[in-house]
Length: 363
Image (cartoon, rainbow, N blue to C red; front, side, top):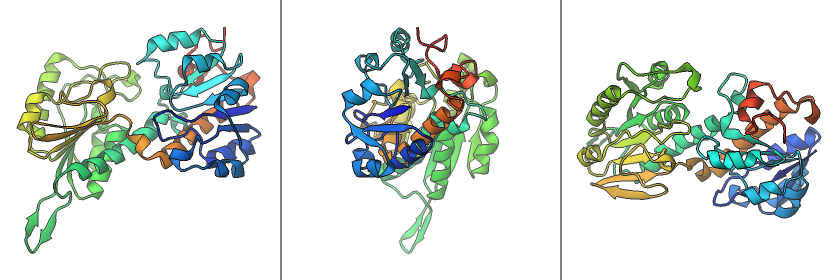
């Protein structure tokens, strides 16, 4: 069975590293890599060949493989050139781009969206969103510390004592928890807010203070994500965030609701009241942003506050991001194809939840 890997447009990551390639080849697969696909992730063509992969052109790979793996979806034209019954794995974002998902359903292929892996115990090793979110939280703090015109840790010097930077993390999922841990390692004083009370112990275990607004709506069926809140709750939430934000040197926002516009957590009036030189890193920029002043893929200064809008921070650490993505794909395919392509259990929640096609098989 042939697996094809393509280069990513406008992204430094690659779906497989040479190490991932070795694992697939050991399991009996033939791996085809587009020439130069791993250059930006520091994975050379020579390293892929040494791992046992074959190099080829984009067109040749698309036309012959049984499974095509990318991070960002190929074009509809390219998907249409896959052979009948082929599998395509990518982060298709069917909730955010439903029209494309409907078009994909018309193709004679099976498309699996890596961003729809169910957040269950058995699927943890396949969970791309968690893998990438951990990197994003780590990089958000590093980016913020570079932009901040102040120290992060407390320093006692002959010239005077520097107090620790105050960091506020909005959203304590995987990204938020990694941001908390990284900020604490850098010596900052950290507090975190989340509508999910279940994360309180995790936040506190990392040495941060948990900021809580009582009365949040929670839904266990939401797969670990936050859900839409009542207007009354949003008002109390806004007041508390305003109170904490004006004291913060750094704010990291991570709040996303799948298929919905990002919740607005920081109003422009709050930005106006923040410290001059404070930093906001908004990881929900691609879906509207958690801050009213965010501009996607830009770093701007508004009312004296530095605001970085970046929803693709994992691409800034392409080596490990590519490694983790490839491992997630490997674990999914090992599970799905454990009895071969002809005996896939399309009724299993992992396959059913990830497959864009409703019936589980091509038309």
